[in-house]
Image 1 (cartoon, rainbow, N blue to C red):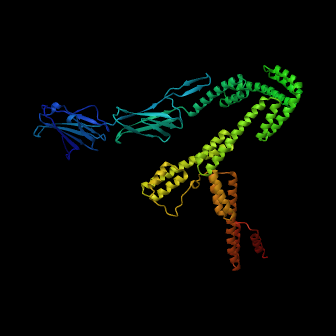
Image 2 (image 1 turned 45 degrees about the vertical axis):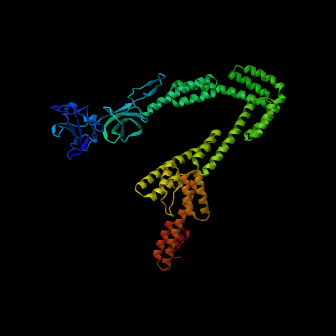
Image 3 (image 1 turned 180 degrees about the horizontal axis):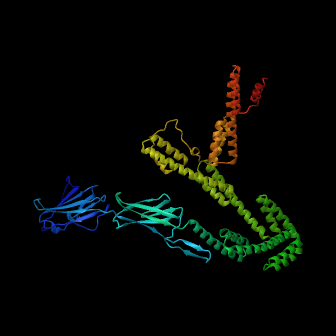
Length: 616
């Protein structure tokens, strides 16, 4: 096979054949349509080749770019090429005899087409709403799409593309493009309306295959769905509240029923049911309080009052074993008075220690009380105290380790320890600190990524020293593998000795501990009289970890500095006025004295001006 190149065409392919007879009217065949970015195959039959002759292929663009990847196949009977655009391509097959003389030629003009790119909405599950009247769910039509939720959009090529391809998506300003998975992409629109979606397809070599566009109508406001969800949640909560009431979990039932009313205040069935439940719960609570007071009276030796409360409670809210309890209480009045008094004293002592959080002493006296007279409530309390002591010890250990890690700058490890601490012993203050620390870590990660992007841009512009500074600052703010890799690449670059490397606090990102360190430095400067420098550091600490106390202190320092600057400015004006006055320029001096009063009030200057006006 010989390959020749001619000025008039892109490429010529030559292949000789030995045994075929020549066909008088050669023709070029093409299987199907030709598409941009996909291989087009042209062919002739072997019967068209003269005996001992050959065929030469010529693929020539009429305009535009040359086709890509031109090759021969099937022993030269097929010529394959890939169009790069939609401009026509002229394909010529020349048939020669064994002496190389052209016997005939066949020509075909191929006009490649772009693929049609179709955009469609994929609905995995239709939106389901709650019918508060029928107490049932119902699904909307799949073409009802909800605002502010991901909508799956799918692109497909027509005809199907034989090979790897990719899509580039675009949408209008009100539509957010989210994650892409091969031929699918997710969009989100914050409000109802029409989203304009367009897509362009490319093959693996980056050749444009075609484009398409479509409109997606978002017709269901998210508020409608949220209201439906709240009504459904309200009804489910109400049913569970009824179950809890039936199982005599009255407090939980009332609380859950109240939550149901909050979710759906217009549901009269729930609100009426809650009113009935509240009335019954009030009776139950009153009877329960009487029984609890009875127990307290019994433990304190007030047996008559205890019996009275038990009997009243049984009238208000009868319980199955109420009469038995009353009889047992009557029998215990005489039989266990002495032991109860001793046990009560021991229990009261333990309770006092318990209330003062002196748990070890409380456990000792609770144990003595049980030794005198068994009491399930006391036993349960002792178990809770022991568990509480264990959890407090674990929480204190985790919190202490977390504080140490935070001071060392190991914020993620500190956050993990703080989380373990609040899990063992919930603490609102520590939980708030965890949220603050999570925010700091998130902001540091974002700032580190921003510095990495700046560093990459500087490297592309060959500004390696500035790039090295950015990556070093990125590692200071939040270490990443990306920054480490770049620092290794720039290991031969040196920074000037006076280079200032910024840390997290320079970007207003820091923890309370970072702020405390800055405050300590500011306090030192303040004690040395460096108020301006101290004020700047106090403001820096406030920007990192805001607090009302520091805000008031910064405002006070600002007022002091402002007052000082005003006094200094007024004194300069007074000094200049004094010089004018001594020089006999009384009018000019008085005018400047008055200007100084505008800068800062001065009783002596005011008195001096008045005396000048009276001539005294």
